[in-house]
Length: 84
Ligand SMILES: [Zn+2]
Image (cartoon, helix red, strand yellow):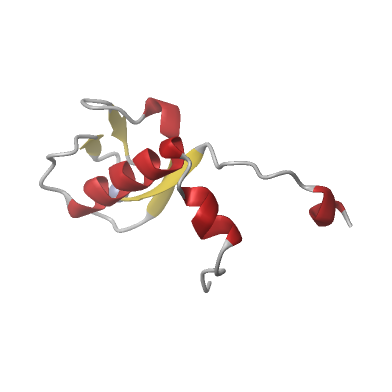
């Protein structure tokens, strides 16, 4: 019954979907700031994190990271469970 004892804990990673190979991977939120670059572990595409990126997948990940940093994701986690 460990789950009942679990204290609210925010995730420290967000899911990023590579816009080339479409394979999602996880990136640490603390790494995700303007200009941060990482390579897709699957196809080695260089991904640049920027809020004005033309890459919608990058924008989505940046938005999610910001929400988690602000703590507003707690509502999403403990409110209505998301399917999947
Ligand atoms: Zn990729």
